[in-house]
Image (tube, rainbow, N blue to C red; front, side):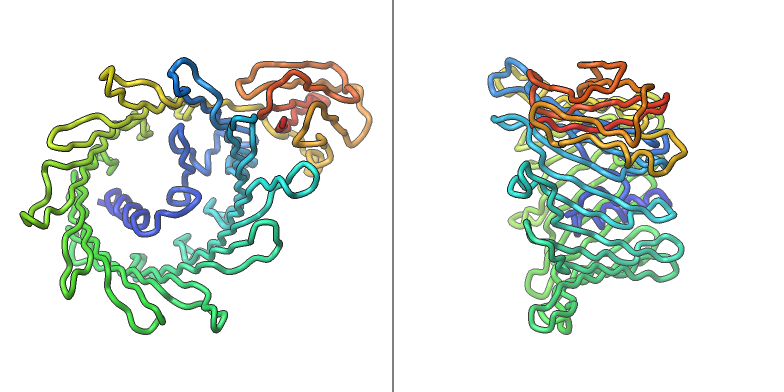
Length: 430
């Protein structure tokens, strides 16, 4: 029952405020599947998620996106950098930075966008921030969202979300925005949780224009057993709630969703529609990792929409494929395929400031870059490689400049072996 309650809470929160940078503050969602924010196996490493997309002619796969995940010594993602391939080459897009509490819960999040107008070659521009607070038992207490206009350096409060508990059970969430008149927080939305017994949970959503008078607008009712959960969504119609949508979840013994069936209310016949449906089927490996899904819809008869497959090695996500259904050929075709490459450790030295003293400049680069060491050292070797791990250049000394003429724009890595200590730096070639 505990697993079902956990799943229930995630479904409730995701349905009410689905905005966010990561799923349930534990994973980052990607085209290759879910990437855990904390993974001890990735300590002091860099993961590169590289995706290709089938072109319009279905003749070849073209570079699509690149996401770089940088982990700290505890295996926690501290940076996530995203870029994509446009018609004119590779372009940086967004950067996310994380800090954590002693419980490995996200404490702060800062989001950046690449601003081509900053400096001479562009720079990261911080635009949004989230600050999380927790109770002593690690239960989420509040989220404060802040916004910084592009090109400026002036953080503005945007939203405050506060969580209330009773004996460890979530009973209410309050949402506030800054009042333009008083420049103080004003509550505008409230979510209340009502538990009647072990088989029913009701979530009521209220809105308010002044924070005093509240009107009930939505209701979510959950009925669940050991192998199934039903979520009914209703909206206020006059003085009564009217059915809107229903999800029926079939669960495995661990509380994982096997089938998600979505139905809409047929108000004309006053029944749940059985002719127009939407369904997702999920699969898992022995560790509980999601290995893919199949998405089908029905309009009087069932038809395929899309599906995905995710592969793991030693319980670690390594690749993923997104499929679409070809109506003409009546078969699946690979639309997007991704792979994850792990680079050597960022740093394996006891000197805490040693890594910061090794610099690579300029970055982003045009055609050449240089490496600066904290002091002269003859025991150094350099290796440049691409996101697939293929070695492009290698030196057993430190060259004055390393030239990248002839290489396509994109993300590369330079590995610096200094006295048998490995330091990896990410490069962006424009």
